[in-house]
Length: 96
Length: 330
Image (tube, rainbow over the protein chains, first blue to last red):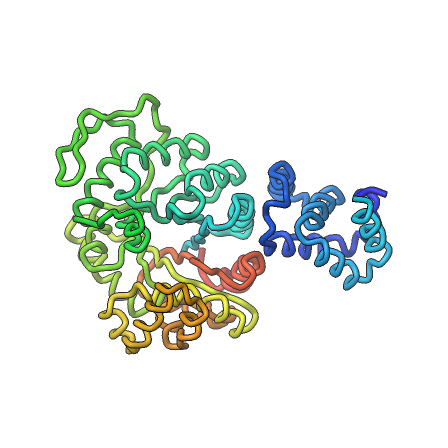
C-alpha cells in the first residue's frame, strides 16, 4: 500500500475539499521542520501549475500533512467518512 | 483602485511564497514583505515570490536605510528586477525604532536619510554612476557592474506630517501607515502639500493606506486575530495619536509595560474595542467593505491588507477576493 493507492480511495468529488483541508493542516502547523525542502518546493510547483486538486497534488499534500500533523490528518479522513483510506493510512504510519 | 497585501516572513519561506502566489491568483496587485532583521530575510523571500509568480508586483514593505545601506538596497531590488522585470517596487521608510534599538542603531536625521537614500537607490537602479556628498551618505563614483533592466519605483512609508510631505515630493508612491479613515484623511492632506511643493500632479503618485487588517466570517474571530497586532501598535503609538482617538493613555502605558515584560496575555487582555477600531480594519466582509470605502473616499488609490489578514490567512485571502474586491472598481 502506497500513498498513491490511498489517494485513489478518495472519491474525485471529495478531492478538492480534501486538498483544502490538507493545505490548512500544513499551513497552520508549527512543525515546519518535518517537511523536506524538496517536498515543499514540489507543493509550490503544484500550486503554481494549479495541480493541487489532482491525484498527484493531493498525494504531495497528504505526504506533507502526515509528516507534520499525522493525528489531525487521520481525524480529517474520519470526519469525511473516508474510513478505508484512513485505515490504509494508519497501516502506512505503523509500518514506518 | 489597487489592493496590496503584506506578509511578514516570520513564517518558513514556503508559506510566504504560497500565500504570495495565492494573492496573485486571487487578483491582488502588490505583495509587500516586511524587513526586520529578526525575521527571514526579505530579499530571499522576495526572490521566491519573483520565481513563483508571473504578474503581481512586489517589494520590501518597507526596508530602511539605517540597517541596509541604500546601495545594497538598490543592488537587491535591481537584481530582483532581472528575475521579474517591471514588477519590482521598493518600499523604504525610516524603520522601526524598537528593532533598530536592539541593534543600537539610532534613527537620526530621518528626513535627510530618506531623501538621500531615495536619490541613491533611484540613480543606481537606473544604471547611473552616483556621487553624493550628503548630510548622511557620502558616495564617490559608485556604479553597478551590471545593467539594471528598468528603474524601480520607490514607495515611501510615512506617518508624520514632514515624512508624508517628503514622500509625496520625492516618492513614486506613499505608504501611509494608518488604518482609520480620519488618520488617512489627515495624512492625505500632507501628501497633497508635498505634491504641490514638488510641482507634481497627484495622479503621478500611488497613495496607499498600509493597514492592519483582519477579516473573518465572524467578528469574534476577526477580533481575536487582530488583538496582538493592535497591542503592538498601541504600545508604539505617539501619545498625540492616542489622544486624537480618545484612547486612555494609562491603558496604552499598561500594554507597553506588559509587552516589555513579555507578558503577552496581560498585554493582549488590555486591548479595547476602541483601540481595534482606531488601528485596524477588522470584521466580517460587510464591515470591511464599509471601512475600505471610507478609505477610498480619502483619496487613497491602494489599500494594503496588512497583518494579521485574518485568523486563517488562506481563507481570508479568498474571502477578500470573493466578498470585498467586487465592491471596488479595479
